[in-house]
Image 1 (cartoon, rainbow, N blue to C red):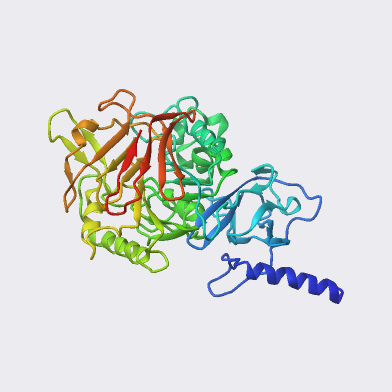
Image 2 (image 1 turned 30 degrees about the horizontal axis):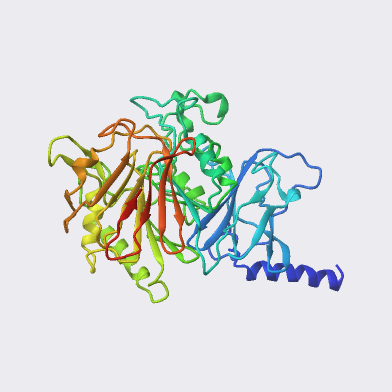
Length: 495
């Protein structure tokens, strides 16, 4: 190699390191960075299928890539940074592990100011690639701005329990249409508040022809079932915007703490990916920065497992909310908005009957944990709590420093009945009780009827946020609500 060529290669490698790329984590612990894995020689047959997407993590923006091709290699991503446009080798996180995880997983951390990210065609060894145009969405915000349009979805999978009613995945499951409608709205960021894997018994599915690797009971929680339940219906959305992924209770650990839906979560979707198939019941909060908007993902997947009012894990979650308050109280964050993302809601009404006082609240252990913090509350710059779990759309506010609770669990799985909103207003809620100021639930036959499939959309006004609910086709249903600018009296004005 000539000296000039050698210097050119060294310059490219130095640029990759300065961009914040993570080392190859498939190496043994402490082994350090590894050289790029070779790709198949030019002209070699391509095989398998690959999916690539952009995910906001606690380490910044990451491009992730999962492939079933046999090369076990990672592709190269080319993006523009400043005036330079260079290629960067993705880093291998894991290689195939049994029939559940027949994949190679790669990732690359990309600077916030990067633009125009594309997978290099000659380095992709998969016969089929999603997105087909090889282009990956990157943040459109800067360090001093925030996302202008945010979509919120949750509880999206097609429900196939081992026993009980099976959802009609072929024609009665709306997640694909919801994801496409949201993509057509050109969001800057998409937040999924948890529950992706609902195919507990794929043998009961009526869409098997579309999912050849997700057809039997033994396939449950496999990569192919994750593709069937999430990646394939969300393809247009993943090609349009970066995503934030929150863990739901369906991504739980099995008794062995290995494999299962939780194993799939940590291998493909978690904030910090794993290569060994292991699963942890609890993980610390993940602090995600979207410019001047701070998102804190609190793993509530095992909070009150039976939804029975159990308080066993209150102290654990108290420590997590203490961490949220410490971060929100840092001088550099004091004037910035925070959204807390937690699959199980802090404050929401599961049902409210027609008799006065007949109100059932969800996950009181989380409310109690917040009350148990040193502040006995979330910091005032926590503007919203975004959750799912209950399969309805509901906005609940208190017109106090307590942030409004937005629950979006209506994006695919079978819908629940909502509460009678009129019976909710004025009811006291919480270990430190506060009366409900406003309850807005989207239902087909209110009051107290079954919910409506759809998603939420938050729009930045420059000083606050507006909120709308959109149905499966993307049409606005109900009122447009604007969050108050006051942090002492947080409520929505809806017209």
